[in-house]
Image (tube, rainbow, N blue to C red; front, side, top):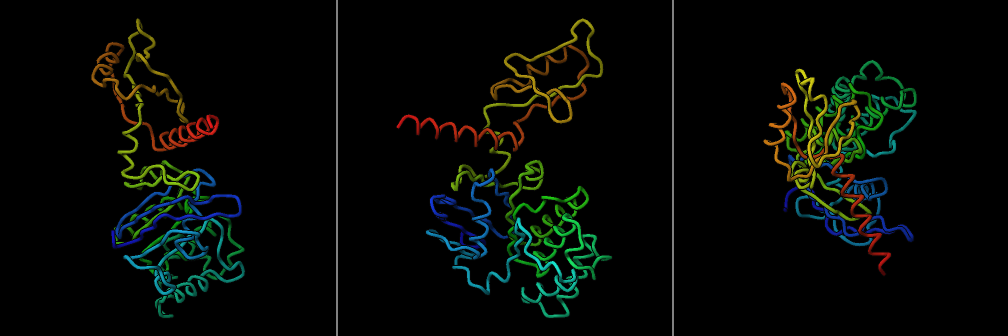
Length: 312
């Protein structure tokens, strides 16, 4: 791929700690990629390398097939996990300032500041200092700063952290709009339900190394298990309970019973069996959530590596 962002073979050590161990990442214009991994996996280090905030030991970071210069990075938008704003600067002034840094004329930077403050619901706080805002509202300002100059690439590190449901909806809409407008977008998040909803493509990293990548639904489908959830209009009183063969019942966060079965289970046979216990009103048989698949993948990898180390 010659257009968009290409990260190849990144290596980075901090003393004895290996932060990146050959990390690869690619994001095309108009593509939204979820960058997933447990704490300490190397996501933030990769994003900082893309933005030129750290030096790398080996590897390359390119945009449109070329090394990234300072002028090119001005066209990128970055939302760090840690706050990167001026606490005592007024919000509108701050947005306009970063817009000018991103290459906008002063008038256009002010207009964009107005637009984004309205979009994130902070127009009434335009003249307040950043330090006067709640943590969630500061996160909204951080997002607006990343967007103010209409960047070609958006690099968002845990953008949903600390946001209330309304703000999450706004951010989700903005990310989708920027992608449709042709921006390349990569974001990390531990809220994998949102990743599963937003992203077609994901990259999964652990201990500085990419362990899987591709279409999120295809990654889920490769799981060796499936989830089954059934509801009935009314149950046959003579058959009050039903447990599918070779299944493990679990309870999801909402209290519903979900059965975990082998991926080889036959959905048609299960539906027939469930129908013998009452009138079925809903029948869900699908791969586990991205959250579950991600947890299993990381756990299996670490168990395998521990076994290899013990065998040495």
